[in-house]
Length: 154
Image (cartoon, rainbow, N blue to C red):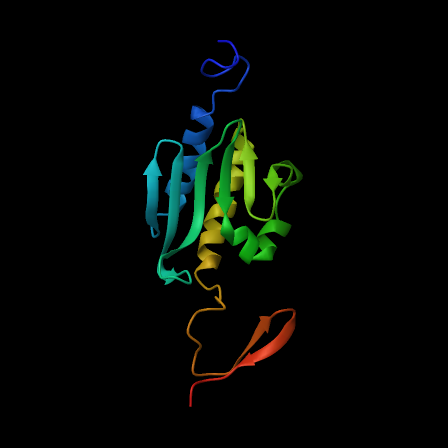
């Protein structure tokens, strides 16, 4: 095809990459809520945690973009030890702090991404959210670059 009329020639077919990444996320998110599932967009959220306005907390997504497929995995951002454990090949795919971009994915990257996804979802269950109701115990809390202490309601 020519430029301007549909998909230009030379652009990769991303459907198989999306399907592989979607399968990885779906296989590891059986205890999460599917918040979007349509062609080119698959998203999952937490069944127990909520964002600031009450929606299920975003955990991960696979989304087809113009020239690549994005794999968003918030646990990599929230649990830094996960990012530290990434291989150089997978780290090369990172864009920002929690997103991986792919045009194709090989078997080794798929296996590692599945392992990181599983570990990340497990660790994300215990993430302390700054807007979540505080416990009855005092607990250190980092805010605006300085340590503060949450106090229980009296």
